[in-house]
Length: 517
Image 1 (cartoon, rainbow, N blue to C red):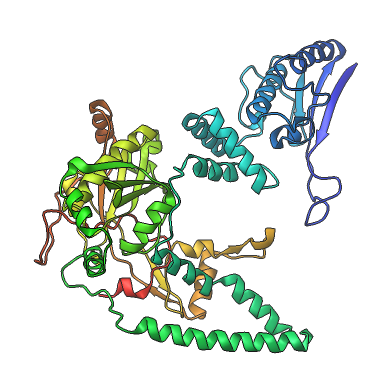
Image 2 (image 1 turned 60 degrees about the vertical axis):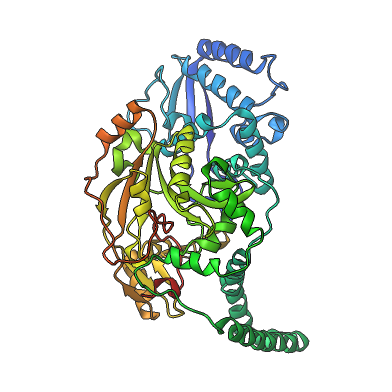
């Protein structure tokens, strides 16, 4: 006689979209002798003294999400039990696994489990292996607790976000810079959710309580009046960035030098000698204060790690790193985990003339401790940049990038052409509201009055850091062709190095003023 255990996937009561349309059933079959042996070994795992509690009934959903009988368990302990129980299944050659999607004769489980058998995709496996190799158990547990507090269910993406947050240096309490406040104000003013609420209210205005209706009209009138007043004051003495042979970054720094700076004498005294300089990792918010004040793009891009240059206790510069897609195209798939992008960076006006190269070189050496050895950086000719600072750091020049399409919306904002794909579907609220092809989305944008622009190619640099063996290995693996350094075409007053380094490609909207030529 053959005995079996079967279970199905899908909710019995349905989800947000109603009862499930598709269900799958999986099962294990075996004779009585095989199941008696299986039951003994299964219970030996459950009876191990190292477990916090004796589990009466193992449920995979409870184990992964630490609920039910696993509520008091650490996640590492849940994974350990899961691995031991999988081992029991693998070591049972007389137990046959079948599923509703199988065709032909059921196959026995082999001695080597595959990712599909474990319910994992290759992408999930890769992410979890990277995560496990970079953090210790205490950090993992802390990130897990924060994830559980913010999310109802554990997901890989949510856990990765919390791990980055936990590993990010806490730093001291940082008072937001005026530019940070201005950037937050822009987001508030352009809030899509507020516009959507107003649109909904206007469409159903006949149902409004007269009192609330009147108050809303008055609030909008007052807001419009205040906005006009603030706009008039902000427009006074405003000067756009103009191309005059200098990089935009330097022009911003020169404007900042005209402002009053506290303790400027002490800062210049300390910055005169690199003996007073220290480069260390800083928090996201510390970097954000300096970047938004001195970096011409005015946003943090894809920043994951940030390093600061200190003269004494004064922050004089910061450089930021992040990861982007396409890393395998640089040194091949075997080294894509070692690739990171220099996405943002800036120095203040009172810093040492060679602060930029000093900071970049020191920060790249620090990043090698995190397993990053290949650094990609970009310089934008549209902003007057040629990448002099990367040349001084002995980065390899790998030519120009292909120009990327951009589009300007009727309200004047400019977006990278890659954002079109993000607009092809809307999942706000937990459900799919619409889905379009990229061609249909582009056609819709044109009908809405968007103007498509040709982007400008950017200078591309590659820096390789590590010991001699690592640098030799990665240099041989580099797929991009190396060329001679470009030089600035127009003469202008410059120091031996540029502070003007724009790092990374445009990933967010950029105001018109930074694109003015």
